[in-house]
Image (cartoon, rainbow, N blue to C red; front, side, top):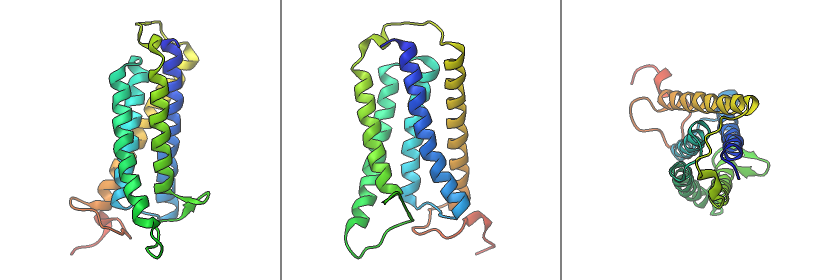
Length: 185
């Protein structure tokens, strides 16, 4: 596998992670389904994975970039696994609406496992690290840059909405409104 093919595959992976963040963000804005603290931490895991993928797209594939993706996905997987275990017990209820039969935290657990598996498979191809510094073709470069920009915008948007939701303190366990928009104590 060449470095340019690896960068293109990382850009496609970045697109997938951006779509996950976009779906969660649209659900929050359009349907008023505010994320719980564990959901916010899962989003941070996706942002960390997107950051590692963006590094691979921008600077070329490196094992350290894949390590960022894997560690972020591992932490996000632990958090989503915790939330799944909290709600798997009968009678405890769920958080949020289901999407295609699974709740967002269950999807997050599956997707974090897929991210780790994908990075593991990519790391099997050593040739991508051989120092192939040829520039990407114009379409691949434009696509890669667009994915990096989209990832940055989604990370910023999710960060800003977290500040609006949680204010300067702890996030509520079951948020119903944005704390910064509430009037006085």
